Amino acid sequence: MTRRLRVGVLASGSGTNLQAILDACREGRVSAEVVLVLSNKPDAGALDRARRAGVPAEAVPSKGLTREAHEEELIARLDAHQVDLVCLAGYLRLLTPRFIGHYRGRLVNIHPALLPAFPGLDSQRQALEYGVKIAGCTTHFVTEDVDAGPIILQAAVPVLEGDTEETLKARILEQEHRIYPRTIQLIAEGRIRLEGRRVLTGSPPPGSRALVNPEA
Ligand code: GRF
Image 1 (cartoon, rainbow, N blue to C red):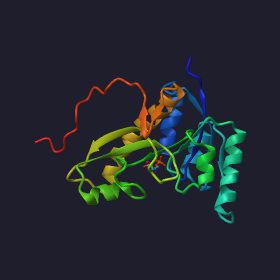
Image 2 (image 1 turned 45 degrees about the vertical axis):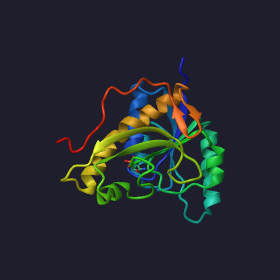
Image 3 (image 1 turned 90 degrees about the vertical axis):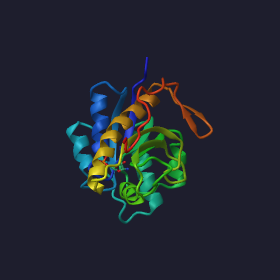
């Protein structure tokens, strides 16, 4: 039987990825339970979403604390809730090696680009300005190198000629909401095996063929 994972989520923003995870857990699509949501921003929408779902939600402002002291506070709260997995969902602070090491192999992130392209901030704008025809999102394990840990899942979307940063963001976000819960489920099922940088899951090949853009 798949064990229900205890998940802690760190978020700084509106929390639509958190919402997708909460919904998937509630609907039984993911064998996990979000046990704690932490934010460095007291007014983050993610905290409201957690509270509406009956999940403990706490703000841990970083102001006035060193980066190390702030992270010790996060670790103390996450560990007090005995989390098995920490999910970064729009958490807008860089983490120190201490935090990353403490949760090694149990810390995942979602990034709105097909890594290793467009790491860092404003990935969707970078993709648009670069002129790529296919964009997307990636879930990955977090390592000390920013946005460079082993890739778990990716989803691709076309970039359309009329796209603005906003329309592209929305198209990618829709896929983020699909792949983040699936990533957590793969971990809950114990399906993940690391071979060097490669994450192997034993999943059957995808039904869809290559995405070609433009098609004609
Ligand atoms: C997402 O695009 C995620 O990939 C990035 O930050 C954004 C967070 O959005 N890391 P939300 O707060 O989950 O709506």
